[in-house]
Length: 537
Image (tube, rainbow, N blue to C red; front, side):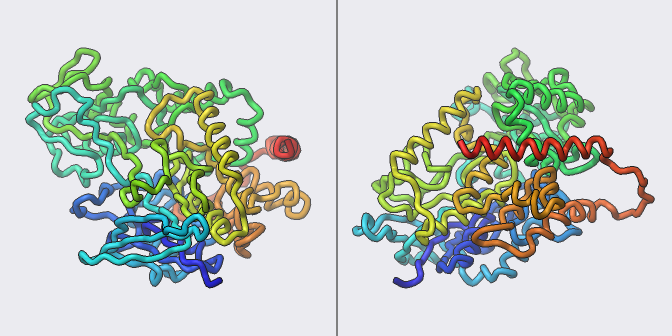
């Protein structure tokens, strides 16, 4: 049997990782990208083509570079910890050049249709119809990796807002927003408090007469700069913290985290206190929002009850004159290229571990990067791709259909048991470290803490206490990278490099006292034993 041919749909961050993983395992990938460049959403376009979702000019990563990097290609040490989209594009280009990915991509090619071949039950093959320059062509592939992401179609619920048809001002979705130039002196209502809503409201408030940020439920607000000036996610997403969370009751974790965030500013006083606990729904990352609220440029309002020709009436009865409405209402999944009779997905997009549709006779179709991890999407989708190519090659087999559906149902029940409200992406939310370990276990690349503790104590301490970076999943097993150990032990240096642009005299006092260090080591031993016990059962 010849080399298996794999179709990769989309050349964004997930697609690039998928191409590389295919090459790494000896598969033959062909990537179809409808745009003329790589990067997906990260490719900024001042005037996006019709139907192409875009980003705004000031967009900066919500995850730090060490947590965002591909597992065998660290981001340059002089790059800022939180990269502007232009820096992210530079990194993606370097990655594509380094691993020779560009020659496997067909640009300006739209995937029109994918459909099972007549002999699918035995071959697992697909017919893929693509269109380029108004010419259609059909290919046959042994496997398909859908890497189009979850920002494929804007969610624009105008029908939920009474009177919007009478509104004489302008309105738009955040995907159309590029920069604040068009909002000088305007009174703007931003509908929706997610990451985009917070960013856009804060940015526009610097030039607008007034910004009103409308939210149904409020939100817990995080910021990029954390304790001691370190990137937030490198401090929060560690195996040490995850071990503590597994041991402590959930209500204690909720209380401690909420106390931490309220210590920066009281969410109730700022009109942001949500009705849900912090672990129940996605949180919002915004460095600027509380600053804009305290100087009065952004006013937090409840949900809009209705619009008039010139104003918005909120559910608290207040009425404000409005010139522009920006809907930060998010996105929804859309796979228009899936044949209607393919029987691939149900209306909930149920997938085994958020990757494989359980109903297919052959596991030759996988969806990459359409979940909502608490941390970075790039390393998560890369690990998914590593698992997928193992399944495509037959190295790893999936459970039975019944077992996969049972796993999907169990996860859905767990989400509901934790009190999550039924919102658009809730059923695809995952805990970063847990999910990474879960997929890594499928292919035998989850780091062995006990082995590391016995043979490489220095590395073990950084793996357990330091940020859970993707390099950890290149220490062992298939796809092992010789540079993984060095990348882990030097990750703190790469975090500090772009900050130390003015050299100052260092204190000789250690940041961690010997008492705290001893406690961490003791807890490390205990946690390893507990985690191994839990895993064995």
